[in-house]
Image (tube, rainbow, N blue to C red):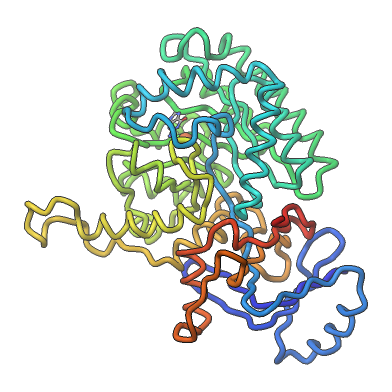
Length: 451
Ligand code: GUN
Ligand code: FE
């Protein structure tokens, strides 16, 4: 057994903030939370005695807090070198001119190792304990990413990207053929499942059609079959921007959502990035199939051509989590995306064009709170992936970040004026930087400690 003692913030359900003062978290040798005790509990004093003599007892100081590790539902690992660069063009031009030439370099496994090693460390240092990754079309480099997650202690869900459409992808960067794309995907699934046997925190293969435009009908059908054969997660992009939305409608006479569903790609374990243009009918399909939205608010400010109505989709029963979308989103931090999710929702509600009448400028009842955005980054991500993560309670995996409001050079003081737990959390969510992240734990194992 191991024990963690300190103040806890988490949201057991969407937007429901729970603060536990000086909680005692009991964790078994598999890294699963056995129980969370608070001082009013009968067993608290007895367990505290047990904790003080056990091998591993982590006790927080004044101004420090346990938060659940973050779940990043959408990362393009190969685009990490490009973060912050080339954000001035529309999506399809950005893909062709900047992104595909970069992703093509991962044919070189040494380059992949060089970048992926650095990326996983950077994500862990920002509290991201679980990440859902797009790798590239290359089988070997995609396996390298899975191994690096495994070694560094991050829970990684990784997809070998499929781009098999001969006319929609450049010759220098695509699958050799549909047959090769499907065979490589199957080999990838089998290899990652084998690797997973030795990885306590889990590493998972993910079926990954890049997006409908980059795949043939036959490719999409084959990926749907692999999904069901191996019962694995699925990820793609769905109705991200106007171009994608219109292109798919023109090709199939159906929405992106309907196409993905009809190829068998929407399941309980499917996560679709962006989804800015999904209408109420599409939203109902998401809710019905258990498909989740990976909301990527920073990226959306550049490439989406609109703001996703998170509140409407939530009310429709759609599962939603947060994604950085590196490098469509410049930031590797879900802390940054929490803030942007709030700000974008406020702009949707108020509207942006001041030459219009105030009453018709925005979409009423669209805002989300910062606590709701915190839920998206934690509990929402766990729900999306169908994994027991993102909440600090019995039966969940012990993935924690330790936040320190008194970090040297990054004090987040409320100056004695703002001292309630909720105010402390708000200060953290808006102002914390990696300097305030003292430790990160995955499955009960320390994976990052600030120097
Ligand atoms: N759609 C297809 N590929 C991509 C990508 O790499 N990034 C984003 N944001 N959208 C995409
Ligand atoms: Fe993306």
